[in-house]
Amino acid sequence: MSTVFTHIDFNQPGKQVGFAHLPLSAHNDAWGTIAMPVAVIANGEGPTLLITGAIHGDEYEGPIIINELIRTLTAGQVRGRIILLPCANTPALRASMRVSPLDNKNLARVFPGNPWGTPTEQIAAWIHDALFPLCDFYLDLHSGGSSLFIEESAQVVVTEELSPQVREQSEAMARAFGATLTVVTNNMGDPRTSCGSAANLGIPAIAAEMGWNGSISPRGVKRTRAAVERVLNHLGLIQSDPVAAEASQQVFIPPGGNLLSPGDGWFESVVDIGDVVNAGDLAGWLHRLSEPEAAPQAVRFAIGGRIYSQRTFGATAQGNSLAVLVQDLPVEEKA
Ligand SMILES: [Zn+2]
Image 1 (cartoon, rainbow, N blue to C red):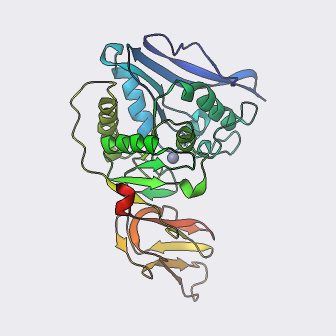
Image 2: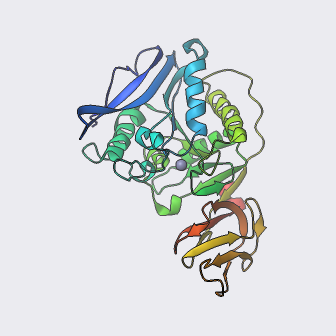
Image 3: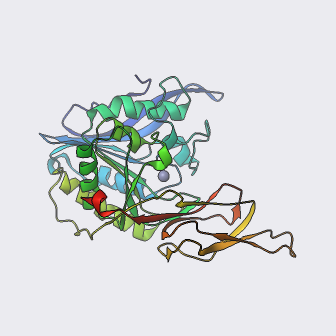
């Protein structure tokens, strides 16, 4: 069920580029819509892949590369069907925000959505109810957004309903994607992301993290371009000669791996992304900058691991994530 309408017919062969419209009756626009760009490129027999960007509106490598595909891919180059949604949360993208300015909601925490809910919930319901049923595979392009430095990675989201076969297909996609890390995660037990929702429907899916800090990373754009091309080849959707993938290290986020701020202040990290630390090592100092005589508080890692993400903002509130650690997957997990 969805109130979103579009003139694009996903069942027609060829290339179509247009918009999907979500009705929104606002103060300054009684009968208006949110216009979300969407494209489909279809030709002959083959799988259907959905690629989304800007699920978070402050992450840009995905939208840049998806728009590039919309401009450059021809139907003749495709075997199967590629559905391209470069700006999934268009209001958030236009505001350069992680959450939508219309309802303050995070599109990656409201799946499977609600067709009669807030705008962000309605977008989720459209993707879940109208697009996912068309799909055999799903690729979700993210980066760290405004609050995270994060190592380049593809996340395989594991939910309780995920079958081993679907997980293996997701991990194969991650290997083809070829990011530095493949992070197997249950997203802190929250299945309400688009990838968690796809996994529950039996659709192999990965979510990539390709940049950070609300910026546009030249390396991230370049690496995203090559990684997406490899996935399209891996699924047989195109035949080209992409840059070969390097081996992706498989890791997971262990219990205790999310270092949370013990108080309010300004956090000075003494470690960097990619560093390997041990339990008890100093992570940094929590300062009370307006109280010069107050000694900063030492913040230490509870467990060891490799630093996967760090907070970008200096100002920190109690409970904020200061860093996330990953560890190698146990051998039996890789088998
Ligand atoms: Zn994101």
